[in-house]
Length: 253
Ligand SMILES: O=C(O)CCC(=O)C(=O)O
Ligand SMILES: [Fe+2]
Image 1: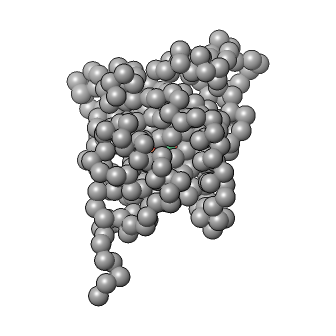
Image 2: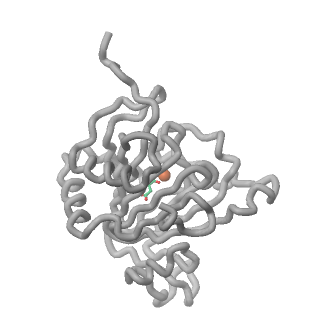
Image 3: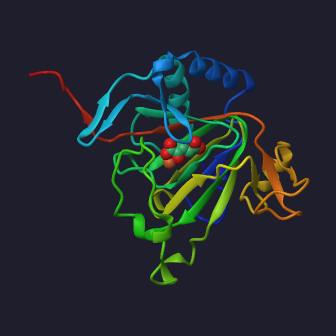
């Protein structure tokens, strides 16, 4: 995996062409073919929850469908970073002007997350927030937003190696982050249609994939010489994780 480490903060890995074009399209077909009742609408995106419900006491597990285990098993094998089979997949769908507020994933999950991207590229921003590491709750399913205003650092010491960074998530790519970045950073996607990526840790790679360009015209909060991505269509992502505690025999009395 070290071949795929990106940026200067350890524990972030990016594999640009993790799946083929046809696997990409098959996944989208399966996702779009799921019953409409499988979608849960949130304020700024909609999602499908696979693997069961993440409950306070653990996962009330349901088997993942074969079209998902095919991919989660490959992620497990290739990364070697998960302690057991991936048992939970959250599928998020974002329209071209939707995003996800900066947040930290809940403590129910083992601190490694793999995000497979489909559809439109987006920029994911990471912001250090060491104060959060021991203070979050929730299951990561709801839009639980940590207050970015609370990101006040009491001293610079802890942050010597911690600075904000961003990554361009191209379709078919796999992002994995863990440990420090999982616990001490917030991650989010801006809800803007044009996203700045001048300093993305994988900019060269994104340029090679032809997903970035120079800003044309003027866009609020962006400079004329900014390198950007234009989100022309919908993005769908698969957030794959391990819920360590699984409720067994929940309906057995
Ligand atoms: O869609 C993404 O890339 C990120 C999703 C995410 O952060 C989450 O579901 O916790
Ligand atoms: Fe997340």
